[in-house]
Length: 166
Image 1 (spheres, one colour):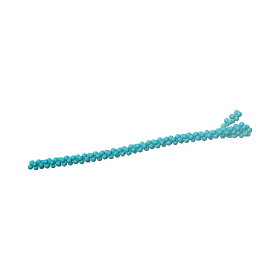
Image 2: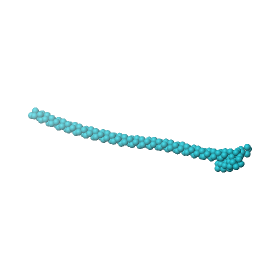
Image 3: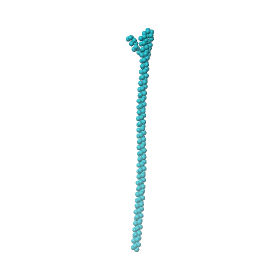
Image 4: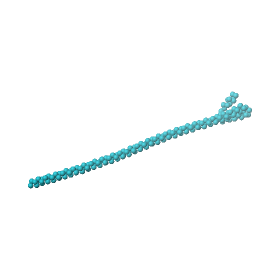
């Protein structure tokens, strides 16, 4: 029995299957059912070990694929966040450009309004000055006319005085 227990620890894989077949064949030849059973068990164990290795490899591949998918998802998420940040920055920059353009337009309009108001004020000053000049001219004409009338009145009064004195 000790001998059988030690033989069950023979390596797995191709070697284990080969040794198992050999043991099974020897057991059949010697009519040793224990040896034949040990051979079959060793073959089954080798096949199970091979299948376990295949499953382990597939599991490792699946794990790696899952990690890659997760990493790709993380990268996509980061890419989306970066794009969102860029879009937000672009919107903010566009808003800044629009605000600056609006402020510049408002300044131009304000300057135009101020210029128009200053021109209107200047025209009003010019009109007022012209009106003052006309009024001054009318006053001078009135004074001159009054002076003429006064002289005429003086002349008429002298003539009346002369006629009365005659």
